[in-house]
Amino acid sequence: YGVVGTPTLDDTADVILDGQFQTVTGLPGLTAAIAASDEGPLCLSRKAFTFAQRRRPTPADACFLTDLRDKARTQSIAELWREVGRNPAFRTRRIEVKP
Image (cartoon, rainbow, N blue to C red; front, side, top):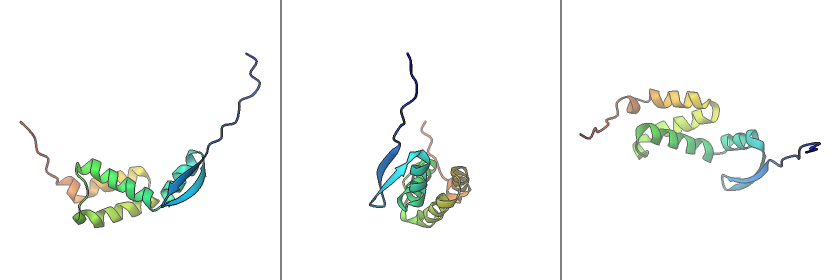
């Protein structure tokens, strides 16, 4: 079909993080912006907690969530999941089995 070149893809986007507009370029730029924000690591830690515990966090979970959020800023996602698994509340949680 006589294609000589490929068009360039504009992968820039304007996103709102921490209530501010930011321009990011590509997936690496978006990932870095989310990781550097206050909202991103906190959201990730809450979602990981909720998934693992099968419940929403309560005020009693605040210290663990703060630690998890701080790790989400500097650690890999794999390490974040290991941290969730090390939490005593995860290892000793009760799950009701319906007959």
